[in-house]
Amino acid sequence: MKAANQVKGADYWTKRISEQEMPALCSTVKSLEKLAKDDVSSLAILGRSVMHDNALTSRILRVANSAIYNKGTSLVTTVSRAAVVLGFDTIRNICITAKLLSSLLENKGLSEPVYHRLLTLMGRAFQAAMLAKMMLKDHDEELQEEVFIAALLYHIGESAFWSMGGDITEQLDHRLSDSDSKEANAIVREYLGTSFAQLSVGIARSWGLGEVLVKSLSNPDERTPEIRSIFLANKISEMMVAEPSDPVALNHRIKQAADMLGIEVDEFKGQMIRCSYATKKLAISYGAKVLVEFLPSTELLTLAYEEDTNKVVVREPNVTQQLKKLRELTDCAISKANFNEVITVTIDGVLNGIGMDRCAVMLLSPNRKRLQPRVVIGDNTDVMKNEFIVELHLSKTVFSESIELRKALFIDHPMSDKWRLYMDKELVEHTSKTGFMLAPLIIDNKVIGLLYADRHCSDRAISSDDFELFTHFSQLTNVCLSASVGH
Image (cartoon, rainbow, N blue to C red; front, top):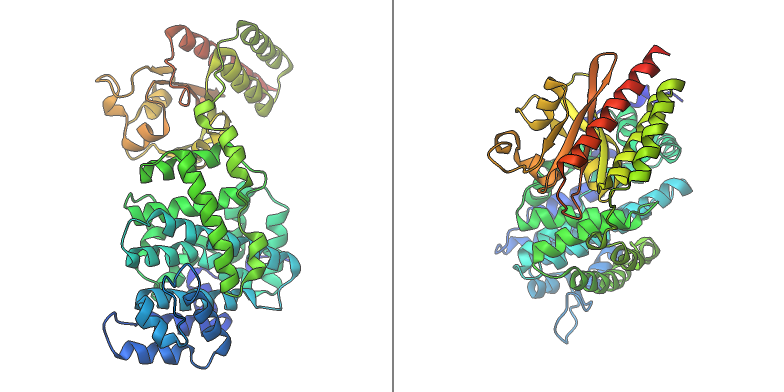
């Protein structure tokens, strides 16, 4: 069935979800968000929001009396009393969480694959919420609660969409299941006319879900503790359920979180394991036992440690490998091998022959304003491939210089006087402080991208001999690419 007739855009889906698919949740959230911290009328608003829903009231009281929230010995028996004991911010978020879980997880009209996808997404979100809150345990409780709900609702657009059920969810699920994960965003846009992230922003604003959530969705790179914890908690939870798993990328994110808290990686992993245990107990308190088996497994933490980026395998220059790969490139030129075959030989030769930590092929966008890694091998590849985008039209950089000059560049000391003006903040973050190498990839006398290599993980310096070999590989690669076009 053609998806084009389904395309509506973020505004349409926000309105449909709010008014047709999840009106009860939308109404409850809007009412709860009106609660004033010290206003007596808040009690009345709170009571009206949940009093007619016995199941919801029961969930709220179970959670309010759980070990995570109830630090005293006496049980609370009414929602109003819970609000007094725990505070409005806490009880409001418990209400929203309980209503969200019941609204999303109790839809009986979903196909099995769609329901499985929703459960996986919700398990991930619930763990992310607990992890983000844990990361801010030294901050005040109000901020912790804001961060919990923002991390939980970080993917509210996607969760709400899958919970709708119907033909479009089944069609999209089928397409995504049969496609490469790199194509997911494009496929979602094809069906919805928007991205899940934009839909989340639309719902967050429409329902008044708070500034922290909107800011975390609109400016995920902001370095404030609350935005950073939401971003990292969601990334870590996502990687812990990813198939296939990438322990090195997961450990990179865990190290970022540990660094943010100023603790050792092992200590943070211990906190994560304890947090995972608490998350399971809380899910059961919320009456969402079905989520337990979909919560991210802590088994990967051990694997991530074994694959720790601090224990990266150092690839020393290997003359035998260099000669072997250069011969293979010569054979590629003679046989007029295709682009993929040539690139595979080249990056393997640079990585294992010259002895680099990372090697990437970065291709220009059709309008030639953007440069992005398309093939990356070596260590910490996930971070580079998914996050490193060079906007060539915004400023003059070493990347644009290599393209314009059509020559290989050796950026030996990136922050030296020679290169500093050509290195913006993002380039410094994603490249190596010990230096890196660039070389243009040319087909039919036109630069199509760059070859990139560095020793980012081992922090080893790159020598002029390394650069000479790198240049040789890039020149022979261009000969092969030109031969393939002439084929």
